[in-house]
Length: 168
Image (cartoon, rainbow, N blue to C red; front, side):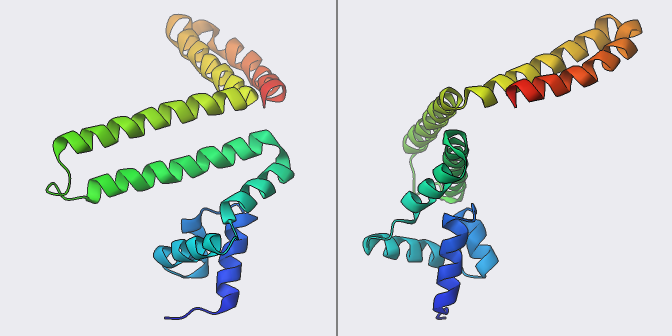
């Protein structure tokens, strides 16, 4: 089924500047994901690299943290796609050794991507650490000093807002 040119342009716009994944843009435009991937690949072969344009839009729109978030989101889409492919691949298609190598490689890529992202986005990483510490402290007070819990919660609520202001 042929799709109008407007549909292809809408999908491209959603992906490049609308901050949608290719899969989500395909759903919005009501085209198969395979078609969306084919359009993207064909455009790249003609010099229209959607990924480079997407990165430029992201960088122009909000700086390195937004770009880093977009890159991590893109990696997570690829990670999920690879995991789905591994789950859907029949036992005969991959030996246990090949499957183990692919899983190890995927786990390594995930670890490295998250670590790199934390270096690029130190504020986001600090906020996550601070919030985790607050949750640990809350659990500690609740378990070890329950009679002080009400006072702790009273202090914690405005403090949480301060933490978000500082690191968020």
